[in-house]
Image (tube, rainbow, N blue to C red; front, side, top):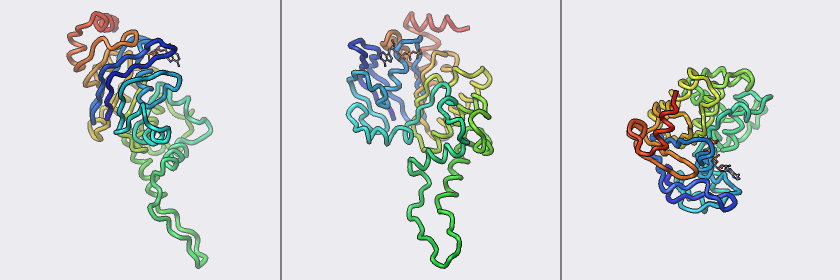
Amino acid sequence: MIEVRDLRVRYGGRVVADVPELDVREGECVAIVGESGSGKSTTLMSLLGLTPDAEISGHVRVCGVDVLTASPRRLREIRGARVALVMQSPQAALSPATRLGVLMRRALKLHGIGRPAHPRPGPKDGTPPQPAPGKGRLEEIMGEAVEAVMLDREILRRYPHEISGGQAQRFAIALAIALGAEVILADEPTSALDVTVQAEVVGVLRRLREERGLALLLVSHDLALVSTIADRVLVMKDGAVVESGPAARVLAEPSHPYTRELLEALP
Ligand SMILES: Nc1ncnc2c1ncn2[C@@H]1O[C@H](COP(=O)(O)OP(=O)(O)OP(=O)(O)O)[C@@H](O)[C@H]1O
């Protein structure tokens, strides 16, 4: 799903991320950990071509698309639809005066989801027009997606300010599911949430990996969280990957002093 080789991202000549190798396969979760400014978010954003001011070299393939050479149109095709970005505080990105259901329906329509394959011609005998065949299908996709993240369908009638932070984060994940995402890139998805709510969001992500084979690339400074979900871990410091390997091994027997420092800083 994600294949990175020799990725190097520079801002104004300064290397801020240097990632020799990063692979995420179907149903797998890889976490990038490290302190603030170590290059985690830059690495994540570069996978979607979202670092316009940066100089980038290397090889990045996401869902079969060669990101560094793809046309803007090809990149738009994978963003949102096949690869979803889940950020720290999704509530801020939700339009405040729009019900969640309306918001989701718009996003799905924009990507042509639920559209009838062959629109029926309108009736000629004066009877009221029949609903488009795609409408019920769209509602079904939306309902199924919110239930997949353990939310009630009723939430689709609410406005963004009527839901909690944890619900907003799960709604953002539901949107990704409804759009048919195969890969989720999550940047500190639980940092703005309290501990019990964090566990709910992580539980949802874990289930989606297992049941739907979703690939997950997670950026987090929270090693306790990472230990509950990641298969593999990359540790970054000052733009460089100082250690990588199976999460169980890296977190139990870190080989780099910096990883040991991060672990010792855990409460
Ligand atoms: N658009 C930009 N222009 C110039 N420098 C940038 C830009 N974006 C990021 N940087 C720099 O790149 C470095 C890495 O930043 P990045 O946000 O990737 O780190 P991070 O590990 O994700 O940190 P945090 O957890 O605080 O988000 C930082 O020194 C940052 O100042």
